Length: 188
Image (cartoon, rainbow, N blue to C red; front, side, top):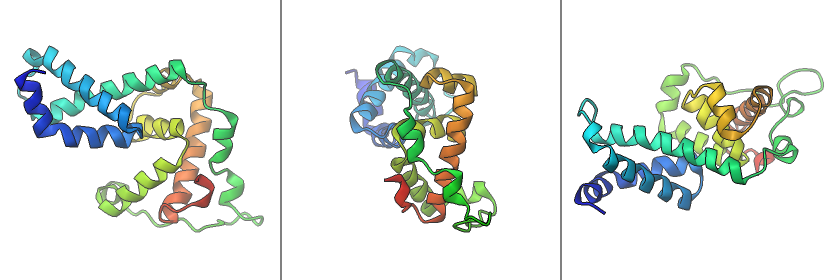
């Protein structure tokens, strides 16, 4: 490995690894994503214009490497199964027989401010970790990274209709899990 790559690894490796691990949910895959990021950065070092910090530039590369890995996984894994879909929370779990909330949702106020709070981030990470892995990737790509629906469908090998059904179930599951502090029993 070159001196530059070693320097980047030393200065930014932990942050890149933590970022990849949160999104991929697998230590080996996170390491691979970081390695691929550093290799791509070395190959394109002349393209770094210095308009952003090195860490921002590396995270930008890492995002694409993670998406590439998710696409590659899709080639080797079966589509999201009906069992995975049924593991998530359905409408029956959210509402009582009389149509009222089974569990009153927590007031979110301003979601952007709450997301910045460490406690909510920890809850979100716990809840995402309890979702079936591909559904967590779906939430990460579509909701947290705001990737276009077409790219998400292509990456995960699903139709747009399936995307919206899975997003609805995943959002419902996350809402319940977040309301209960990341401890929702239906997710385990």
